[in-house]
Length: 290
View 1 (cartoon, rainbow, N blue to C red):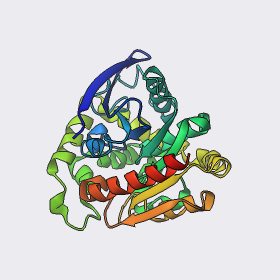
View 2 (cartoon, one colour; view 1 turned 60 degrees about the vertical axis):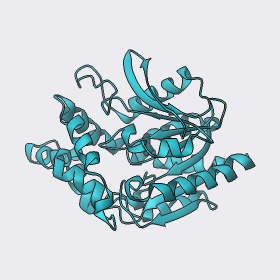
View 3 (cartoon, helix red, strand yellow; view 1 turned 180 degrees about the horizontal axis):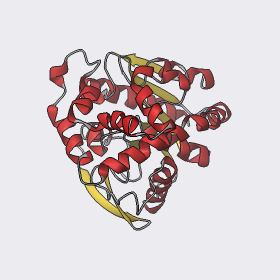
């Protein structure tokens, strides 16, 4: 099994944690995590892929083991997180890479792709939305209410997503057998988002998520113009981003490989081996053809 290295880099004055494995001369694959987790979500996927790829998985600022400056010292936006990711990859000398995006990782990855289309060799989206079609209204309604108006009631409803029960719900909802999902996952995430001041960081990003759908037309234009190889490995029972979000990629990338898998939002926890097999096959075809 490949050795996974746990490293830190200083990026624009911030200490960014990242996991790295595989031969630095192998094709690069950048794993971009979602809310409320970190590169911890890739702890088993990284060694499964590192035999053939140079795998890099950063913790976004404010998440995991990366710095989490308070909101009065850093303006948390998806633009800012994408910029830090691009700077990290530049420091590591990674100029061409495939991306794996999940949840928050998607708007970060889309910004990287639109800003530098030539850098992206392939896209893997695992419940990483890029279309209005994917939003599950029952989940997003309180977040969108908070985006429109930051009343005490709307803020309280948005804060509900930061509770231990809500984070557990993200992990187990839609999973055929909940017993295969380790409780370590939601307890790990809850401990990190419960650090002093981290609630304000998460609320800032809840508000800024409203900036992402207006960027979708630029994403769709990029997909049509550049036709990157694209794999959607999607938990079809996801209560946050439904399967229509996966199907929609075929509108702009007709030969996209779309797999709806019996699982939920954090598909790696219940179908990690299946997803790893799909990625190895997909990247073997995509990068071999390239």
